[in-house]
Image 1 (cartoon, rainbow, N blue to C red):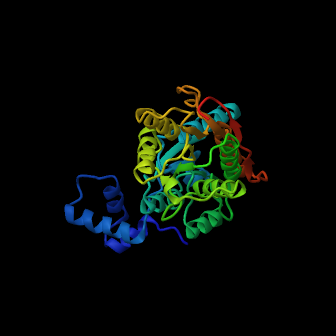
Image 2 (cartoon, rainbow, N blue to C red; image 1 turned 120 degrees about the horizontal axis):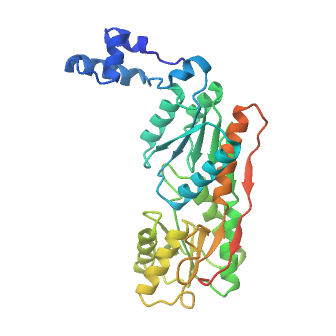
Image 3 (cartoon, helix red, strand yellow; image 1 turned 30 degrees about the horizontal axis):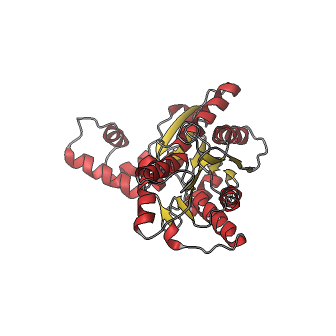
Length: 336
């Protein structure tokens, strides 16, 4: 697809390219009517201004874009720490620009268009999301590397954990401890904008139940509203309200959610792990700080971040790159 230029917008709006530039920069000399006409043309043509003057000369922006649903959970925090650590170790002058989709498909696609058509980054790292198939093809055609963390797509580089194996580690361990009503608390596994990791963790959970001869009980599986303590508390409350009475919970939604499950259990007079064993996912820094300390599935988040940015830089430098899949490990503490 040919990139829309400022001259195309000017022609559509019936104004000069200078007027379009003034509108983009919100110049007060432009009348309300003219501004509305230019903005309409920009929207119709999906024009994205090239904000990097340097890229006009060098063809490079010196920017790596990182796109995520949010940057407020422990998952993104530790991934970004790994990204920064890698940049420091390689003494790379690249800047990191963060873009949050806030869970909106429309916003996500618009962000990817801005990055691609506006030439805002040399490479893109996506955390637990991916562009549409159409945009994947256009990124590939433009030679802009895409690194997907916890996702897969044709033509993109993947950095992920073996999530099915991680879920099996957790559930198999709970079964070995005599637990037979194991709840799953995690992200959505159906509908729009569903990530790969929650689907894989659900699959591992179901495989372990089947191997142990345990039935799948729908009322013991629930989605979380948020990746935090309150999300975990609400999830356990929902399971109990729907008639579920688990003797264990696997929090595939992360450690903070697991800590929320523990908090709600204790508020209801349930002992952890005697009445309710709890296992988290990630082994983030908070896992060992709770009471009881959290048993959890470890994935090396900082190493995954370092690997993702390293592969992006290697690809930009013309080196051959391959997908990277990390093996999870069960870290046994006091909660299960």
